[in-house]
Length: 125
Image (cartoon, rainbow, N blue to C red; front, side):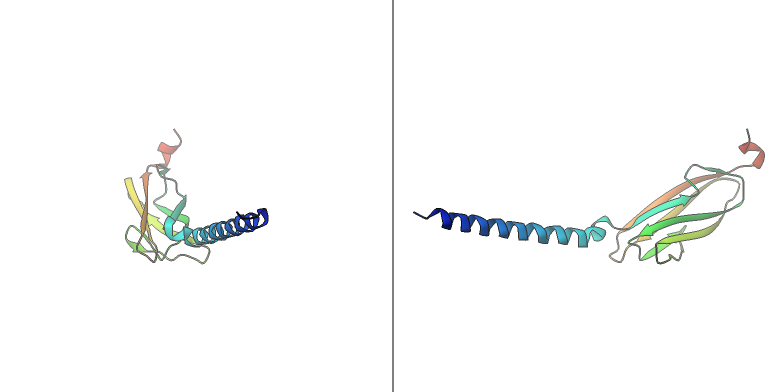
């Protein structure tokens, strides 16, 4: 039969091992979280479904975990903080804009905007 002191030491050792294992798993999760999430794209302006009177709009947004970003198939540069902007020319009527990002591991994410170019007098009604 073991003494209470030996039982306490054994229990304390098991608790320390479990705590160390949980610490390692937590650290690994936070280091690989970006890999698991893949690319993140947020379009700030214009919003999907927006009616626009101007033929020329500037698409702006932010991104994370992006190695390559395209707007309608054209490469767009991303600054160090993840911001991007692209000039768009809208034809009269309905326009679909595709913003696609890819991370360095090949994971892709696409955001699709639906814009409507209308006459300036239509927006006021």
